[in-house]
Length: 246
Image (cartoon, rainbow, N blue to C red; front, side, top):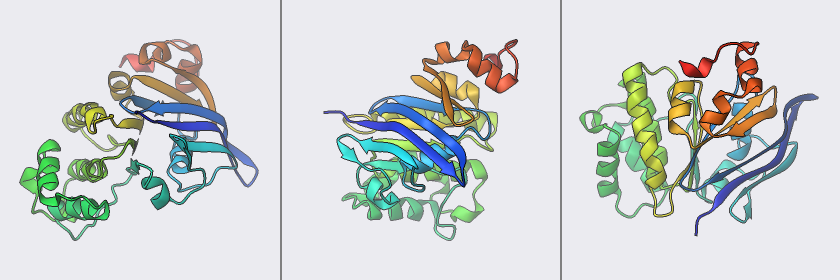
């Protein structure tokens, strides 16, 4: 039986400043949901609340039937949620292989060596397996971080700007890799992706949720969102032209 990640009327204020207002969204296993919006729209605040880094001022987050609102990140992770960050968080002095193995040990993976080799192959990391993480190019570090997150076989995966700093070739490889992740487990891995690369979002996602100034202004298929006047105006400040056509 598949599960859903549910965000129900989440609001967040910082010293009286409303960062999020009554946000609602649902992510099913096996689907990819894009979360976009101009800078300062509340995207990172929302995924930090979902993953337990921040507590909401109001509202509820649930994984399946389990209320995980305001639980610490490690407790939420035990419910099947993994995430990456805008800046890769790796063990800089360990090799690529050791970084993956460490995450698998933390997740009590029974077949660590076999699973490590699978992840090295899947994410194109074999040639860097013995390389110290601190010496890797930025794009390779991003791939390694996602490999570590996928290695724990999450039901839900939050990706925070995974293509940031990548060139066109690296972004295309990343897109192809992410597109395969919903089939990672027998029930499918649900992915919530925050990304400024709108072309990637439009190609990759089943649905797109758009924030502006802490509020939802649109949600729908990529085709629906790219034509939404409120979305176009939020990005361009006017209704002429369309940034999503690039």
